[in-house]
Length: 368
Ligand SMILES: NC(=O)c1ccc[n+]([C@@H]2O[C@H](COP(=O)([O-])OP(=O)(O)OC[C@H]3O[C@@H](n4cnc5c(N)ncnc54)[C@H](OP(=O)(O)O)[C@@H]3O)[C@@H](O)[C@H]2O)c1
Image 1 (cartoon, rainbow, N blue to C red):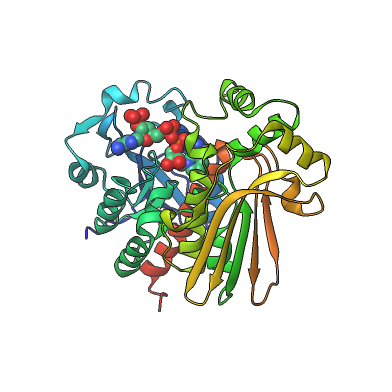
Image 2 (image 1 turned 90 degrees about the horizontal axis):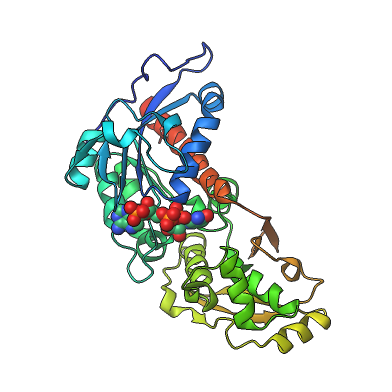
């Protein structure tokens, strides 16, 4: 494992007398919506992070399928990276051959992994996160694949190496689901999880309630850029299944695979049925449920009628909701209203601040 000091950044860094700022080398794997939004958020919160958290940063590596493995050991000009891409920064960056060369040259303290989901295996994200941890970096991902397929391995490896493996943005974007349990609910036993976690199905069902048929409503959602060209991942319940599996793996600490979740999408619902349900005050929602039975978990994702008197019945659009039943808090519910990609980026940024604090513990020797 390579150890590297988080040295002060070049002259641009401001270090107030009260908080000693440390500079972290950041590497971005994947440079799509999420990591670009992250760069924007990091830039907009730069002063706040320095002054209140003693954190400074520079981006030393960016990689994607099309970009290849790009490095700037002294840091990319983050302000020049924008929603359109790398702009002139690509020209002046060094291109290396592969992941090993990238890690060796960019020397990340933190890897932000935000590549596309591989539903079947979670690869190659899992191997890359493993390599970054072994190299001495904290690893933060927005990608559900590693949590669904390799949560325990990556968690244990990170613990062994004294690094963080964090993934707040994988479920409910930036809403604090995993950190809530990690930080604020120690020794709580969760017996049941219920949620509505997929926005495309919410939006298609709303369109059907307003008079459209299934295909028409789906086409409208596609035209609005909400549903994918191939919408089956959402419509057939895979996205909700991956999110539920991630929650079970982490919060219930029971290894569950997506194939073990009983899954039914919304294709079989007709417009008439959906409108009748809404008129009866019990609209259809794609509901996720997981229930602990001893050492096992029974999990399902399927359309259900939910009364409007239940907070789950009121969730629509891109909003999502999850309810936990526990031994000490009989029921508590988190609702996230209308998140955007900046919300997802915030989940990664909050993971970064947590990882930086853990680094402080390690370097000051306070970790027991
Ligand atoms: N968008 C959201 O609000 C949101 C919310 C929660 C979680 N997530 C998760 O966050 C991740 C990123 O989402 P996104 O919206 O940013 O996706 P995106 O815009 O499609 O970007 C994906 C990025 O990953 C890169 N990539 C894909 N496969 C790769 C590979 N094998 N090797 C190297 N790079 C690879 C792509 O590179 P090229 O462009 O060069 O092909 C692209 O830069 C996904 O796993 C997604 O499920 C997204």
